[in-house]
Length: 163
Image 1 (cartoon, rainbow, N blue to C red):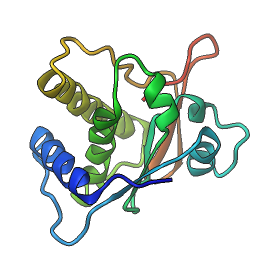
Image 2: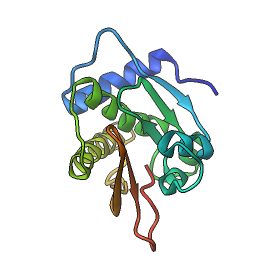
Image 3: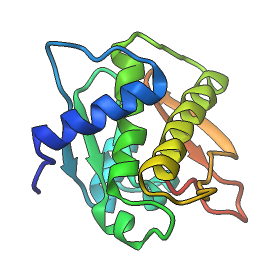
């Protein structure tokens, strides 16, 4: 698995910070790596079973780490997003964490997700010149696995969030 270069991370980090108004820490930078669906499930739930969100998860950032994981296979199949926009979304979470924007509840998690989806949509409109990006904001059942890690599972008849 090849990590995204530091130069690309720095460029996208400046964009994410400008979209959200967060300060970029001077002494650290997240790494961005590729993961399979199974690895995403392991990172989300600690196992590959009973992890409904992993099937549709394009990226993961867990608070307190400096690692962002991307499922490039799913990103390539997604019609409305590409890798840089998913990275912007996950960098927003990294910036929230490094700027001490904490949450311990599902309502707080929805606010954080909304902010990340808004940054991603603004990036898509401004940089990719697509109007009205169709991003699925999390809905359904919320499960705070641990502080800084939440899974949104869709109601039985719908898919989990795709980003």
